[in-house]
Amino acid sequence: MKMILRWFPFGDDSVTLEQIRQIPGVSGVAACLPEVPVGEVWPLETLTGLKEEIGGAGLEMEVIESVNIHEDIKKGLPSRDRYIENYIKTMDNLGAVGVKCLCYNFMPVIDWARSSLAFPLEDGSTALSYRHSEVLEMNPVKIAGVMDSKAVGYSLPGWEPERMGAMAGDMEFYQKMSPDEYWNNMKYFLDAVIPAAVKNDIRMAIHPDDPPWQLYGLPKVIGNAENIRRFLKLNDSPYNGLTLCTGSLGASLDNDIPAIAREFSSAGRVPFAHIRNLHHHSPKDFDESAHLSRCGDLDMFEVVRGFYEGGFDGYIRPDHGRMIWGEKARPGYGLYDRALGSQYLLGLWEALGKLLGR
Image (tube, rainbow, N blue to C red):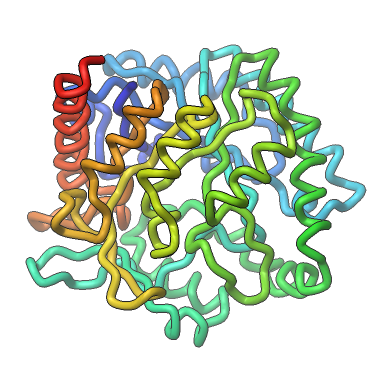
């Protein structure tokens, strides 16, 4: 297992590589090129320079999060083949710089949704939160405005400004698409890119829907164990895997996160894990919390034990952190709380190794 942190390059992050390097046990970062428009090829020269910058700080760049999928691929339009070809060229360039894992998602229109990016918690910290009724009252364009106003000057992956203009039309398009059509479009994509994943030794890792329930009539895919099984069977290659996000899947109280971690890690289909905790106020209302078990609804010892007993050997990053100690940073991606989370998770992993003898 390798512990990493997500990091945004080119001045789009309040956290520096030098600071990440000082967190004990953290070996690398999950990087990205957010300035490349969705559907275009990520340049090899830029990736090479990024790897050199990260390596120069004593860290690895073995995970990319994420190469976004063009909406035409999700829609199954004739133009999808051109965008899939570009995706494969990007994968070739990622392979050339030693990337081993590619996190992505297949969520239509909206990558993720929250009602607040800085909800005040009882201890004086702030965190991302979700109130279902508030989200339903806002259309995605209004949500985007709320998010942009609270992003403190940093980009928000999944809510890029260039996507907003087409959002209304995209949403209307999906109202006419059946769930089976959407699954077929995913299979078409997987069958095209998995050979490139094998060639470049890059494990594909799809991220769950966030939140994992229906919103605005859009297709939902990766939200429970049953659908994860169905997705992995679309292409049974070990290079077709899952980013197991405990926060996204854990938003649904119906999901048994330790069992999900154990099942899919045992199958060798989890190259990447995002681990965070959350606290529910109702089945569809929650705040993101500190990683510690007692701060939320997830038993983190049992969650990490599920990964450990399943033989997980991929990458873990502490997912969204709170804003604590007066830090000003991209919502969810400050230094302090994620650093604390990484140490807690590493402590659990070490304890499990000594208890279980592996």
